[in-house]
Length: 250
Image (cartoon, rainbow, N blue to C red; front, side):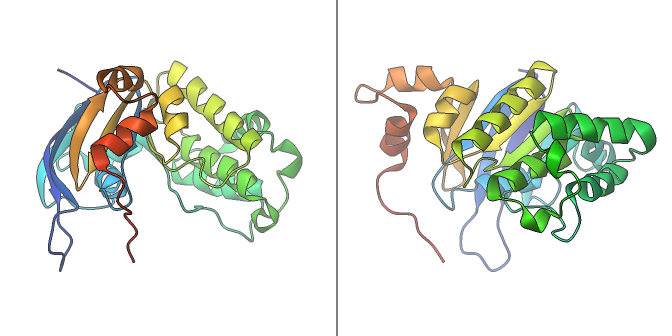
């Protein structure tokens, strides 16, 4: 089946590691999906996204995004994607406007079109009144919203998000999710990780649960729940598939 993202037997083993972080993982993500990558700590979610964003070199396997090969067409591929990391990718001593002008220039955006884009995005995220405030003074929710704007200024074809709503208030989470749904409706394919399983159940068109670097189940959230006799929610499916053992690691 054709898809916006096609992954074939992708693996990653870090230097000095005894095991693979991602092991022969194959996956197809359709165009226009909001696709959730779910899994315990250390399951391989961030490693997988880092490879798809060309931030990490795979140990073996391959992938294509929008038909572009990650080795032969890496530069073209990178222009199509947006990345919103879990850690804030913002300069704390710059204002929101200065941050966004800088990130916009990295995408080749400039002049009045960039300024108009920034103003529209700030308004959509409720940050217009804080455009000229230094981001070090922002709350966690404000930083999350600004972090998202920085990753979507160039209107990416595929958007990767790593825990985009972690540690935010209810209002900020609502605004972020509404903005992401709007992006999907405009044609952006979204791939995101989250530990908020209730959020993923309502937000995602499809999810995959990953554990120890491999996919253990994949499908529409409500379908996955219906297939498990003792499951009422996606969280129940998650615990059935991955177990209840703690996954803390240093």
